[in-house]
Length: 505
Figure 1 (cartoon, rainbow, N blue to C red):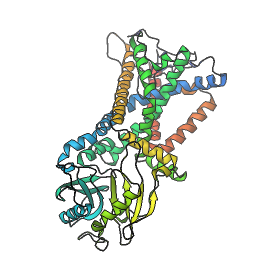
Figure 2: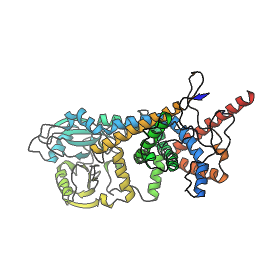
Figure 3: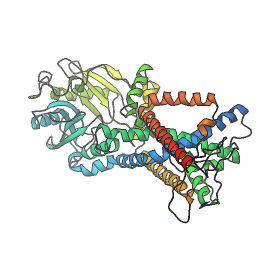
Figure 4: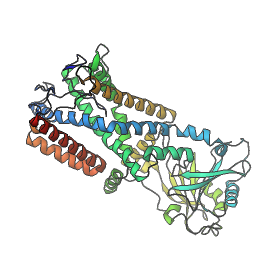
């Protein structure tokens, strides 16, 4: 048996969510059921590191290496799909402008009709629907969007009617999704990224990718930094070794690019988990317990009242006449400091205030909101983004970055580079797996997994710590916990099968 490259077979792996880890230095004899797996008793810890830290890392490193290998091999395909669909979504603002140009733009002019007249035109075009909100035009040639709750639409969807602000004529309508008011092309790509259009079952794929991304990235970083401490050179961690060849060269690129990409990967993973089906609920509970939720006005929003109650002739809105009052409400909100694009939500009942919120998620984020008493033309409540709790601000900024909105085109370019780097690391990881495969007379073979024996070799206190951390993380991130149990079950079954074969051989 021979290997197809001459690099050090015991060199540790790189830091990113990808496979291809070489064999670890296991401080105990490897499982005899896996003959030929390399093992080395030497520790990779920096001699200058205190002895307790060296002992801890010596115990944990084989476990981290095996987890990094198996998780990356099995989870990397899901991460690839999430990365590619997410990259498509990042460019949906430009795609939406191109595909729906007939709804979003009109011939620019120097004059505009009152907003109330634009809203009335939309009301007249769809008397069967219940008006919900209006997003005024933000410049010449850009349409006003009037939003309605309508029968037959799925949850979080509204009917959007587009009005020419210069003439007051309706130019068309479409469905609109969520608080971002996404049009069909953007909504389709958002759902594709989140669920692959497979419903709740499809949400598991994206949650699996987000749950494991941070784990294999941090594990890989630990492995890569331990190698850098051995070499005593920072450039060996941050820059690839151009003079290396074979698997050592692949490993060098894999690790250095992973180090640079780590912060972005962790941010994308964390923000993605806030939208997930199971972990998202747990994260929401933690935010609630510590008072980290995003604050909201106390005035009820239209969605708080069911959205579809009282259709026909704008039931519940006749007395208040929201169309006739919207001009004064918008002027009051502008006087209170709300700038740029806004959404004016209509009262859900007579006597309730209008709510106006800024919708710009680019930097600096404009998310101020006010409640306006239309009869008195006064602001009765206000909520400033500057007053958000720090964690709520971080969440808002992180989600905007995840969507490619925070820094505009610069944000899109950064995410593109991050995704391309991630895909390259996955490719390099699988390539390392291929490069360390055994070859027998030219027969096909794949790279061997990390040898067994790491768990048995770890001291009891390390095993207790690993189990405690795994249980806590698995409880917080259920998809990660369940998949980890499946990995362990398969691994144990494979090990038992190999031991039986070895005994009968």
